[in-house]
Image (cartoon, rainbow, N blue to C red; front, top):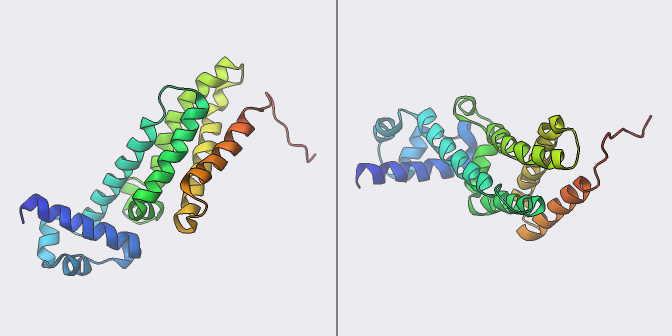
Length: 197
């Protein structure tokens, strides 16, 4: 194998192990054993478990972020919401190992980016879109950040649940998410108040 082929093989093996066992449950020895190489080969390419984990997380973070952000341009806001829900659920479906890694906490994640960092990046993009929509409808634009966090969080947490449930099918889950978000958003009160008091 060439150096780049070996590196990719180690990343693939490590990605599967981190998804299966988490950061703490995975060892350099196991990565090397599954890749049929010696431990020094892993150290040579990545400097250790933290290094290979950081690369895996960075790649998954970028993949998810690219998918989500690419859906947030142009079109009717409901269509963008539908596309974003499908993009996240498609990532869960196509890259379930990567999604498992992103949603787990580890000591390394704080320096390499975590799922919450990805969600904040996505929410920032959504915030700009919502601010424009709020302005067009005479809502307080300062609240766009709150609503962006709520929308992104709703879709992300549903994705975590769906990762294991896998029922109903992806498009049906997306349709229900959009139904809740859109029908709730389409009837926003200008100054909502709790009715419990």
